[in-house]
Image: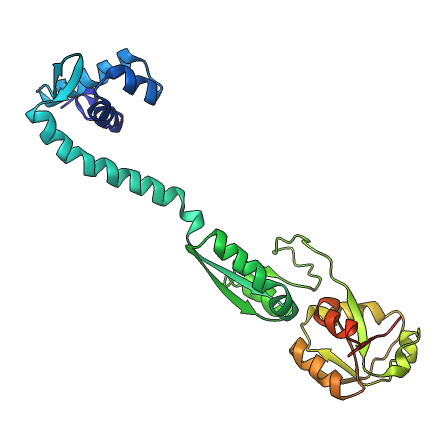
Length: 261
């Protein structure tokens, strides 16, 4: 059985190719952060294992002989392949696919520039974006269908790792000019309210907020998309509670009235 010292090592091959490139042990030692004696010893051990000298010394420079040239031809692609494998596996975090879920408002108003910026920074990563309400996104994460989710609602599930990354503001808006003065929720509870569907974080936060102030909200219609609610409000004197991000421009342009509560 051969001793372990009789086997080639990657370090020896790296030193060999560096000596081929530089021709001088001192240059190789400096480049690799080793002593000149360590480089010399590695070459001697390599030649001993192979049973043949690989270099001729010409004018204080190491030059490949015929055996050395043949050995270099075999070794070079092997080292390149090993380096490629190392690079590939060290950079797996910057490749592949990330599955992202987000609630409707976030998808419509926040995610596009964020995803574009991410993909510019990590061009080899593909992003699969799925839209859904808060409950749906949480369920998909628990089922292993999503890697990360961005939601507006409050979740208390111990199985979900969560972190607050921003604060949103909910506002009550309408086209009904009679509601432009300050009012209380119990005075407008019988208005025609258009809310998001059950499972929506916006809906849950709003209803949780008003439950101590009124025992009744006249839910006229439930819709699954923020843009649909906005479109309905433009043509009917309904009322909704919605993310301010979604209606900032409409409020500024006086297309919608923010109800002061």
